Length: 239
Image (tube, rainbow, N blue to C red; front, side, top):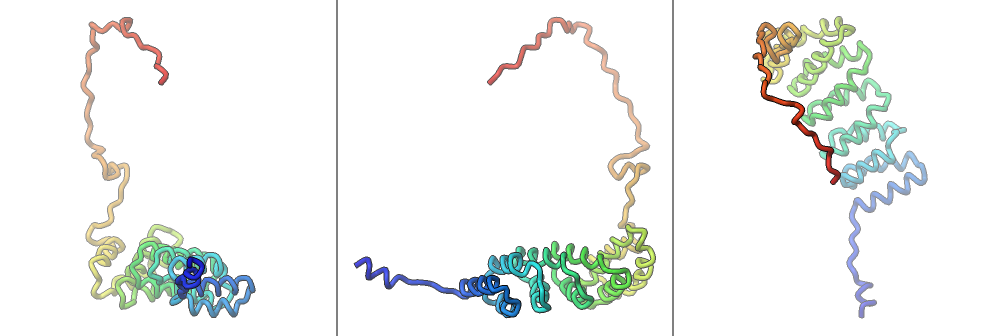
């Protein structure tokens, strides 16, 4: 009978569903200890959509060191949306020097948007701490971290208030022994070698035209046979 078959219908219960219920319970109880425990389970028990929700809805304002560590750990997540969710939270956190170091470590990854936003966060540090970050990045063994340091320097180069910090870091640039091709381009732009940095001004036509080139438009004689009184412009027709 149909009633009997309903009893034996197959039900599926996966880890993510269980974790979702656990998150709901922890949130309803407002229990920080339970949330900390879920931070340990989330990477393996939650799918990417659930991780996003957990970050933005539950851990949106981390209140314990474990929750903060989970947010920073999520910056290396394979899911682009999870990384973005974590970055949204990190940008609002008051970071410790150790957490800034963790952000520097994340620059080993090649996720372009994440790198841009981490560099922006690093540049919010005090000059002393930013100088220390630059020293670590520019002397790192990993090319990706050195590239991040060079990127920061290029941004400092454009800001007059960072002139002393920029000058302090430049000797480290010249000490990069075996730069990658990408590094060479950035180093040449910073040091003025190779002519890779072009300044566009009115004097060079902003790189679009030759200011020294002049020309005159040809004279177009009027049509003597044209009678404007014979031209009739009708009212537009409604569709």
